[in-house]
Image 1 (cartoon, helix red, strand yellow):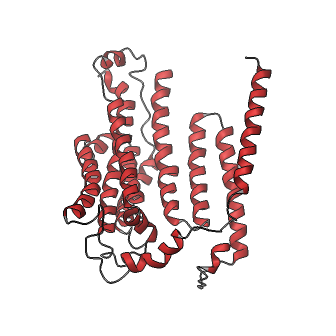
Image 2: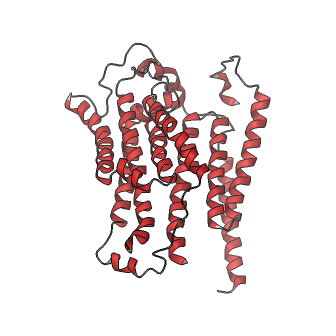
Length: 98
Length: 253
């Protein structure tokens, strides 16, 4: 990566660039697949669960791209809080429809 | 409009979007390349200047603290707006009564859900406070910590303990905590002004050890207030929705 000339710190925990690249590509593909799945699933409750899974995938993506702060935000908001709000709204609408 | 016309409009729009998108992509810096000077400068000076090793928090609560005040108030306004829109209006009670499903019984939470909620509530509270109080040392902060704290309340609700959820998060108290959180952040900024410093200038002693929990002055303090605000806002928003869901059930009794 281009920024390596600034932060070329190598520790025993440093992941080799090749593996890191493969990880990033894998996660990008998974995120694209997850987003497509969210759109294609038409049943609202299932869609919300998939959205939550998609939130976890995005969190992993941010982690793989060295943004742990955003990972935590995405994990809490995207995987927990937003699905929770949507499920409550669904419960409300459902009960009225029946 | 016929489906045929619609398809043509769609295709034209997609072609336009694709063209602009590709044009925009060509102007982007290469993958992993950061051309601006700002981030490099921050990376070099932030730890020494703020004594915070969580440089992202240092940027959020110090260098760009003013932006974060605005962001925090977005959530504050959202929660307030939700409370206003979902408040019970005169006459709504009658409409609830006419609801044919008013006595619909909802199955109680399963044992598995209750067990998970029971096991996780305590650790989640600890985790939330840990995140909210370690913004200055590690990738965390008031926002993440606040949402994690709020999810402890969600767990209690999910375990079927709605009354407990309400008892430990009464609306008035939650609103007060939210106001203290949002106001506290702004007040930290105003305190600096009162001392003749710029708004949100870090006026507390920074400590000497970068990465110590007690270091970084107002960064830790602001993170704490943000944690309060965010946790209360999320509890309030979910509480409002839960009330709405329960309204129909309670309306008849």
